[in-house]
Image 1: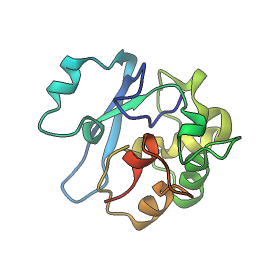
Image 2: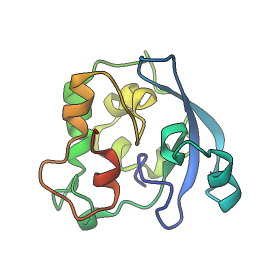
Image 3: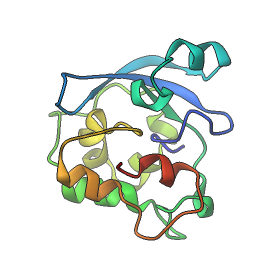
Image 4: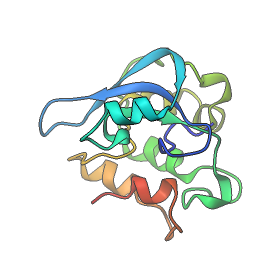
Length: 148
């Protein structure tokens, strides 16, 4: 599963809620169990875009995602390289057993995961650079992660 998939992705589930101080990076509080993304959940976030306040996961889009290089998620690799850990130990996570980032980057990805929000105006240049796909994507997750 991609832990940063868009809420509109087929089979998407909510795995956390993002909140933060004005001007600071958001932090994700994880749910004990994933919740299916429903129309009611999407409406409840209005007028805010769902992936500004919800952390959602779905099956990895692989070749349909600008972060996928044919073998791995380059977003996970770039986030681990660019960001300092946000926590000392991996937070409780309902999808870890199926998470692409965990399987690919292990604990290092989990230590940064609480400060990754799919649709964010994150003020950190390192985050914005890491979130930028290595090549233009034809929509999908990569477009949602692109910094404004």
